[in-house]
Image (cartoon, rainbow, N blue to C red; front, side, top):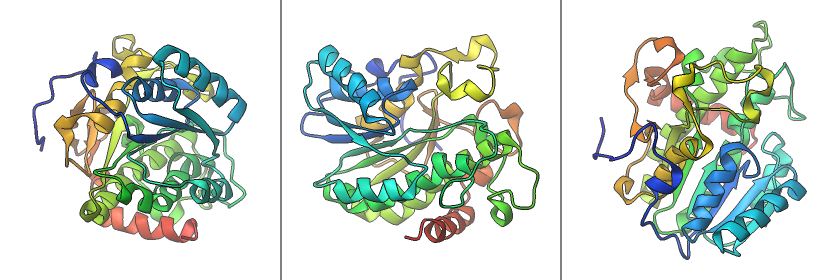
Length: 304
């Protein structure tokens, strides 16, 4: 399944996988860029010369992070814009305010195992945050991506997608009892399916779209689960956790590679059972029929 040999692995850092890459003149957006691996993702993009926008819910927190990145990298082209991916009105405002080409979009913001909540648009919160808002954002920015030369979209998923496929007949848990981990798993499967569907639709525009699994990193993401439950030997540092996103966003080794799922800086093996929720990509997450069905459902849910 792999298309090229990638000389990086589990322990590689974001700086290591992007060594020698020059992003001068490239424009990048990182959602959730003021916390967790989003900070390191934005920092390394800026370090490599990109003009980076942190798209964040809290602009004041974002500005504090941006100031630190400017100081650490010497790159003054680090900006902050307000974006709440769980709020479709906020997504539309961000899209309307964006001008010019966009070379790199990292759909990074996310939540995990949240208690049952619904957005103002009536969508289950994890599905809205992890998938639907990013779907609306990326589709809304399609023309900006197409205007760039070989734009790349990185969709941050998780091994949690192995917990559940998208349950199309009950995405919003109107009939099933709500389960935070099932909702999380469904939302992360949707993220992979989005990459598959967008890759097929946008190949002629020179846009590549891939999903990534960052790994087990101790961040605020686990606030509802009481911290990481993964075995200690599988834990990653934040620089290691951001590496796969940076690899997929920047590496010349992946020119033209699209519609795939990467983990530990490698294309993942397809698995046909839960695999202990540990590694690999589920066959249902790469299924084109599922991807097309999700695209149609998301288009209707986001009123696009």
